[in-house]
Image (cartoon, rainbow, N blue to C red):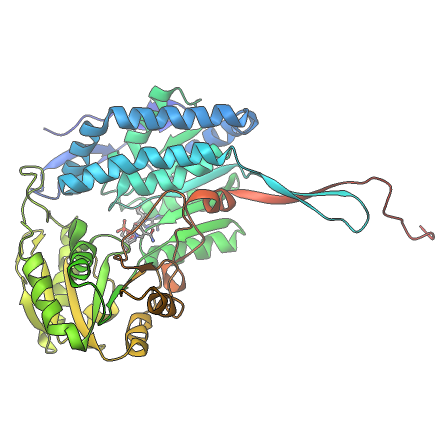
Length: 486
Ligand code: NAD
């Protein structure tokens, strides 16, 4: 039976739209919930509610805003198991992924609460003896558009620091996860007693998202936009935000490499490749999408990587905790993965593991012989299909890793940290991890990509910088003369 939702959350009240859309369970295609399908007018009302709440929220003592964040974290902790179930039903993830995500989200709210206890500016030397200050303050209404793959984590990352800093928020979750990425937050904020209008949630289908999205950028009350999603949509969002001269942080797609040097610790390298490529069916922006392996250890690595990946069980994760590889989120995504796989095979790539697709379930798949003219080499896959590519020198590995429009993350496996850092220094990515997979995140770090992987940072004090404006303020103390003719 479909889950009954209270509606959208605007100005602290629950409301419904004229229509609903179906939110499907990707494992079996059943209707998981019927969700309000907002239009532009609903988005406008939500923005107005956020604007109305801004003055009071931003003027609260910072400690009080932090206490609300801690309360939100507490409720997330209390509801952990029912949220894990919802994540699996709505998003199709493995039980362990749900436990990780629900464990991580309270930490984001803790980190956001803590951010309020740090400095909000600097005192600068002044030529004229003024008290000269750089001071950060909240911007106003921030809109947050989040994706479906880690819906609570990526929504929390977008809203927590923005709210703690004193902004108010209108959140639009993905149409694939409108509950876990959106309305769940409304329930929790209401329970935490966060003042009305501070967080507003509007949900809509793909049919209405362009109009709703435009309002979330163009409305004059909106001062900042946080978007996490695909590069194609992120480009449009950033372009519109730019035209309206609004601050915008876009976290986008990736095509990350794991570079395995000839001195890598083999066990850890195969584990990093396996986790990085197949965790959540490869549907992570920083998933390993190319495994680059030194030719001296290529055969041994491939054999051990294949053996590890072959043990990952595929199936409905809601039915069995042992099913590590669940469904892809929707048929469109399966179609994209199938197209890349078929294109690679037609152009000469060899499948060494997997290759099977059954409905939305794609087997962990490893290929060799993948070359730059294949789609699998160039495009983001966002599925459990990964090529293993040999290299002869570190320079060659770096060139292959950088041979993409994306620049999100990377992993470098070597027992020589100096060699690892030398490689890292030449990689064109925002994040890099020596002796780990490219998949890494912590709430206090400057997370973000370069090139087509995005603009701006989420995490820790970098989030605070993203969601505040820095002003220059001086107190004159008689030191600056005016020209005598004035
Ligand atoms: P998507 O771009 O299709 O959708 C992202 C969000 O944008 C959704 O909420 C969607 O409803 C909304 N949207 C779509 N069209 C819009 C429009 N015209 N105006 C306003 N909003 C609009 O991406 P997705 O499929 O949800 O997520 C997968 C993508 O996200 C992958 O490319 C992945 O790499 C990327 N991603 C990046 C990060 C990161 O931190 N860099 C994290 C997770 C996912």
